[in-house]
Image (cartoon, rainbow, N blue to C red):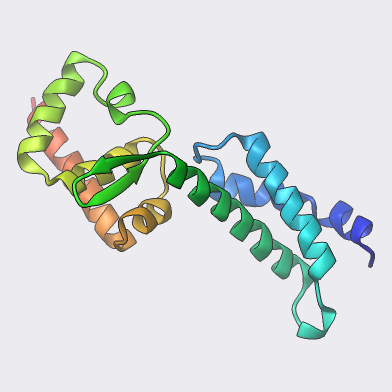
Length: 163
């Protein structure tokens, strides 16, 4: 199969991978899909049938890696400092998370009961980052991310949702 026919037949992979893994990204859908199409073109050009794998498997990996690399690059361009960690966000968490009176009350309680890292992890989650992205940023396991998110939700629930 030539490059053009591979691209026509497998361009749907870019949409599928974007929807399943990258739709919560801070990078625009159009930009990520464009990078995915570039990756698909590269996959079509470099695919080796002698390796014994299907083109779809190879192309999916190349597309996913390209989109991940673009997100990582974008994150490193926008870093705010958190003690001993770097949290990459495109807007300040305060603009979204702590924007009102109730939010400021919640922030005070969380700052008393959570470490800076736990708070930064929760803010990342609240901003729509996936567990995988957060785990990579903070160099912790997805289980640690889940435990932190559940802890913060429990604190908020106990302090602000109790009847």
